[in-house]
Every structure is written in C-alpha cells, then in structure tokens.
Image (cartoon, rainbow, N blue to C red):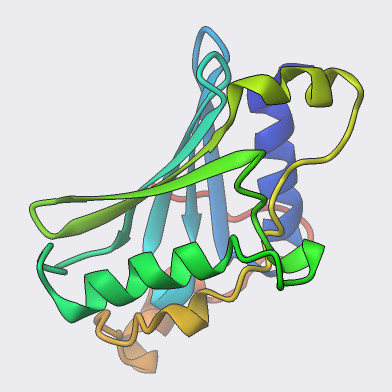
Length: 172
C-alpha cells in the first residue's frame, strides 16, 4: 500500500467516525494524494500529501488573515507551543521528527508538516512519528471564520449526515 493511500485511509476512517463531516480523495502519481474534508465550521479543507518530500500541506487553514495581524502571530505562537517538550507525547509534534511551518499567501494561511530527513530510519523501523490528529485547533482562535446558519447548512445534502454512518460523504 502506498503512503498516500495509507494517509487517505486514515483520514477516511476519521470521516467515518464523524470527526469530519465529509471526505473525498484523489490519488495522484508519484506518491501524491489530494484530500478534501468538510470540517471546522463547515469549511472545506484541502490537504495535499507528497510522499517523496514527506510533506502534508493544508492549503488554507484560515482565510482572510493579514500576515502582520495579531491573529497570525498568535497562530504561529500556538504552533510553536505544540512542539513544547512539556506537552504529553500524544499532544505534541516532536521538533526533532517533524517540521511545522505556516505560510501566508494573500491572507490565506497554509500549514505544512514535513517529516525530517533523518527520520527515514525511524519510519523503516516502524515507529510512529505522526502527530496526534486531535491537536486542539479550537485553541488557535479561529473564531473569525464565517458561519452558515443552520437552515442554510441543512439544505446542503453533504451536511445533513445522510449515509454518514456507513460511508464517507463525497465532496464536490
């Protein structure tokens, strides 16, 4: 099984458990995969995985955030805090194993997680270096995202939960 398929399977399992409200995948060539999930505040998040570069990128974690804003500085500080040795292992991204970076392109904040080069041997030994997918994004103060009214959400079949228990909800 390719690494991109494995990443997709992990994300799909979370979608089936209800962590995400929807999920779709496009397996690319050369160990690449593109995944879309309906998640926080009914936003579609796009994740790109590149096995050759050992990189997972979320294209737009938070929209409309100026690079010089306090919110962007707070997000970077929060991410740095996720690498603090004082955090329990299941809550932290070990900076010796992974690199976390943010980019702000025209106000859209992207997040990239890269497995560091010398972790190749760790991966071969089968050790798990993945950060916990339960990192508390709610701590990152992303309250400025637009929220659709419940009546608007319920018109969208992707958000009604139909078939959610048995299969992932495809996103268009």
